[in-house]
Image (cartoon, rainbow over all chains, first blue to last red):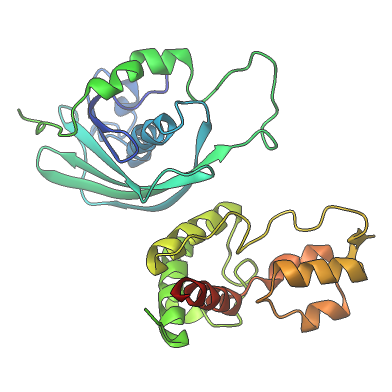
Length: 167
Length: 132
């Protein structure tokens, strides 16, 4: 199973801001268990979606050469539920700048015009002294699958402004 | 911009509350960042980011919270700091209060030297440096 909780990037400002969207559908198996009879997209997977949006933004700053990992969820406040048929939007913004050690990112999740969540994340770069370097291992965070499916090589073609989800 | 020590303490308190999720009244000058306020390794990075933003200063890596302070044998013997080690520590942490630590200098206790007061005094000196 691929662990990708965003569908597409719609805006990208290198080192500053990124916007991604995800369509929530009844075809996603986990919704049938969460919760039986009343499908709601789990907040934990929304935090993961925000982490992926922000992680790509942070990773891009060093050309995906660093192993960017989510080190801390500083804050995650949820204001509403997400149901099948919703199209959720992840707005991630770097606090300050991306640095050699990592970055702090603030995120907002909205569905249509509803504010769903406010999230603060911290990313760290796994350095060579902490992660075992195996020959040919490459970057396990930004693998070819992830890069290709999210069209990460075309990020710079996206504008800075994301159209509204209903446009 | 000359900030009073109280003003520095207030902003530092805010940064620590945001980074560590502790209550304001837990952030006293003697509070140890690790043992009392519960900071873990990633939190130190978060704290540095927030302090830089709050005071508009640059904190070079390892300046405020030196990691892997003392690796060599001349500084550490049997888990304790040697005379030379203590000297080295004093240069690396000029704002720490080493009086209690000196009586039983266990390497494992170095993290306890990082107190709120140490941060406040570091910021004070950084701001004075910038003012020229």
